[in-house]
Image (cartoon, rainbow, N blue to C red; front, side):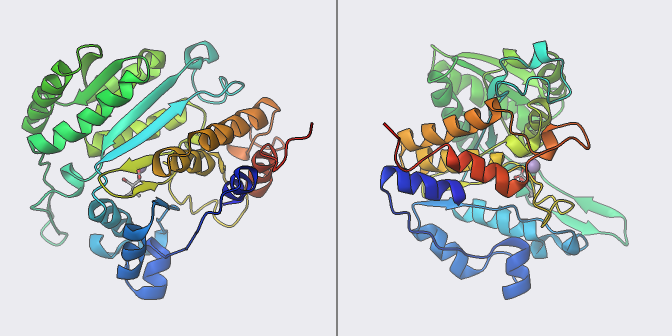
Length: 338
Ligand code: IPM
Ligand code: MN
């Protein structure tokens, strides 16, 4: 919000913002993870900016009474089937992650994660702790795979024209369908190169040769797992933004979770959330120049050496969450001096 205010002042916009509870805060105040008023307000909005929802206080709650149920519920209710998770290594952060800098250098990829299907939503599902049995189901239909792979190909056209479709087709029938549909959609986009990788080997290749990837498209759970891996590769999960798009308003949220160990300590990295605001400006409100301004501001503060605690060796001096957000907002002055 600090940075969005700076954008509003700079470009003469007036963003109308209202706040609604979801997840743990909604459980506490309303007794449900996704109150009806929250959902209605999101339906009415041009775009939704979402904070992380998890809270260990609800670790043992049944799955429909957990904070996560609010997030999954809103994704489903808004029909947000395509989750776009771009990741790149910022200049100066080549050595911030576990990769050798020469391997990390130039990493610039997007994970397109299917977000409203697969194991997260499949039925039947059940848990009987006493009996020691549990079931989850991984269903996909052709239509569900088509629309998300289509998003991936369209995205690739504006990038390096390469799509990697990730599945586990050597074991799972769902993945055989996935691979077949991705191949069909790929045939409609002959200018984009398509390759298929099994998820296990993709996980390895992301570490061995991350710059070989451009757009990665995959089902819900594989995308969840691979995008955290990519977070580590770029230096910190705290850097990654995401946009969840469907047919109505988009929902924009950083890839990271609520990080309960960091909550309230003013040490979390706000860049993932700020880069998410840039995606909201561009993909949610159609404000391209404003989005580019935010991205440049992030790059500038990093070039100047600003780092939060997740990006420096333990004990080294780092900016707090608010200081980092302020530093980025300060790169977006209301009036440029002449
Ligand atoms: C994410 C998160 C969520 C997910 C959790 C909080 C339900 O990990 O957005 O990646 O698994 O989708
Ligand atoms: Mn995740």
